[in-house]
Amino acid sequence: MVLADPIAAAMDRVRADVLPGLVGQGEVNLPWRRGQTPRGHRVGEPQPPGVYSTLEAMVKSGVCVGATLRAGGASEPARWGDTDEVAPDDQLAIRGPFPGFSQANDAVNARLREVVAEWAAAEGAHVLELYAGHGNLTLALAPGAASVRAVEMSEEAARFGTANARAAGFDHVTFIPGDVAKHIKGPADIVVLDPPRTGAKDVMAAILALRPRRIVYVSCDVATLGRDLATLREGGYAPTRARAFDMFPQTAHVESVVLAEPVGGG
Image (tube, rainbow, N blue to C red; front, side, top):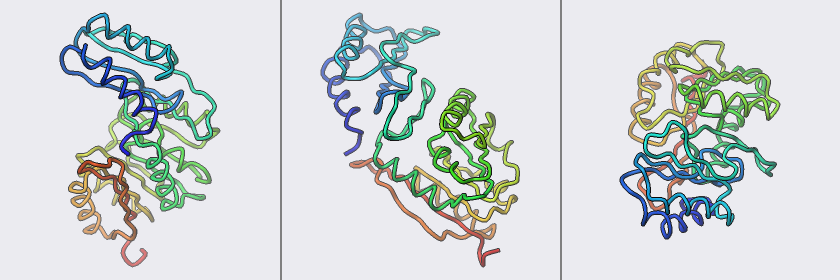
């Protein structure tokens, strides 16, 4: 329920054959689809040789299509298999940097993208997307839009986002690397934002100054979402639609999408 099936299967193998040999604290990143990065395993301390051989065996046996291990302060990670390749897929393949962030619940993420695109209604509009990552929502917003400017703090994520947009044929999409607060400029008929758990307190005033006709806010924390919606309300915008997505079943967390529009339509 929590993870895409390929990740769940790979995690079973990790728990059985990798975790017992790990040294120190670390982080595990696994693929959900061929061509998705980051993938593999990343930790901050040297590992026993058996960890490396197990990850290599997992790739060779098809448990995962690639693996990446960063350990011991190495400047480059050890890699096995396809760690930076996009393969044909029924759905849009989106590449991302290592290390980076992707939603692990594939089915719920697909529905989230659909709702964001539907509520943004970007046909013929100029869209400003904030906290864009490497294009998860960007590529859903692009069809039919007059332009999409996607702002992302990580230069590497923005570079991957540009490549994803070009691969999909969206020449009207521009990724802008840098501090989000410094790149909130018009024209912007529609603003879409997907901030981190801390929310978007520091950029709300700048968004309001643009006076977009729609604001679509994606949030993984209901407390900071509520705080920022109160700011929008003070600035003349009211929530008109809201939906929760159980992205993280069996946990206390939920992903939310809210559409805010000018009070009175102006």
